[in-house]
Image (cartoon, rainbow, N blue to C red; front, side, top):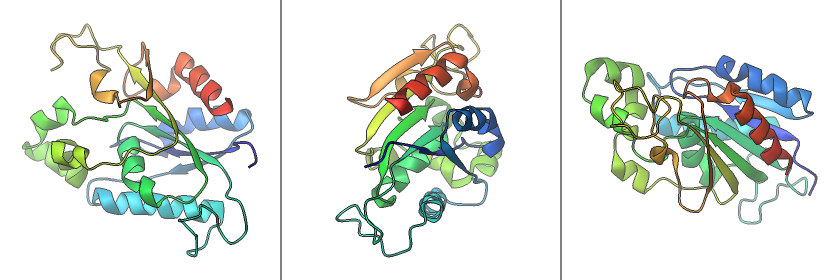
Length: 220
């Protein structure tokens, strides 16, 4: 299999591909082929977004609809290896889509992922503004049963969490390490490499230490 050269980026809730533009430029400057996927949660169910992400990857890779998922190859031969870098909700979409992603999925880098039902979503889930802005996704994030059934991709994975908001008393984390949206503990998955940086949730993808660690992971 050829070395990893293609990276798919997927942004967080309420953001757009523009939020990952700096990271995309840096990846391209290091020789990666980069594709960004955009979505909105306000009127689109999470399952639909996950399926559109799958289709986006397949189209970029040039796969048709006759991919042999059992053998992990398409009709052109060995699959092209690719990585996914997700920010926040983008990681949940990736996990949801993972059982049906095209062959070649090799690495996953999770930036500030809400890998456990986040306290903030559970506290806001019944508020009208939160429901209007986050749609189905906001309710899923607040549902522990959704998380219990959420797949974890069987690929090389690293989690990058932030703790820049730990000392801010107005946040609902009771002093626990947090990035302003999710706590460090909410980002964890069992047996997955986990690293913490002095970064904020919204800007973790631009933190120089995170970018350096991400490039090291992708190139390793």
